[in-house]
Length: 205
Image (cartoon, rainbow, N blue to C red; front, side, top):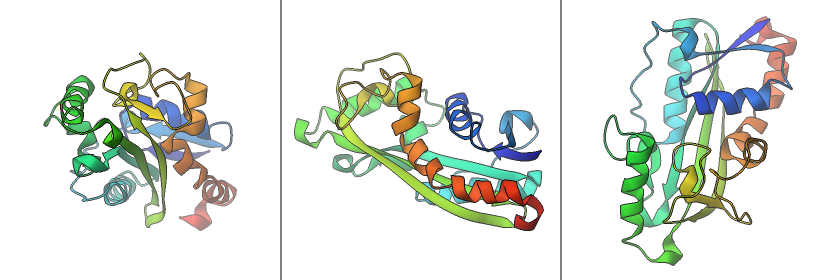
């Protein structure tokens, strides 16, 4: 069976990616949790796409396996596109999801309600030992609220309400979120390529 390494230790991302891809593809889905000695590169890219490329290429070269890397976050245009690529460390290095949400709430209070809109962006990169084969992106737009709601999800989910939905991402059931998320939109663009790899893995490497 072909191995596909999901290049993260974030259990929320792992769970979502596996839930989407497992029913469709005959891969052995591994994660960086299976490679405790591996040290990922620093995320120094200026965009989500650059970071995904960096993570995928590095992991594929070091692990000699097919790798799927994700870089994602929340973008608020009225806040100079922050948190952006620093979404996971918006409140500083080592910050928790709660720390980051608190900082975002403080910043949202400084802008008009009409400007409290943004989008989740997910960039994915698929790589083998020979390099990066494909990159895709997915976006979900919505509004931001100033009182967190919901106990599911992670990151900024309790503050993000997708347009045409009354619930935040943290209030949605897992099946619904996995059907409409930015990560799902990006994954859908990769499925045809992954099916080709499944059909002839060595030829594609």
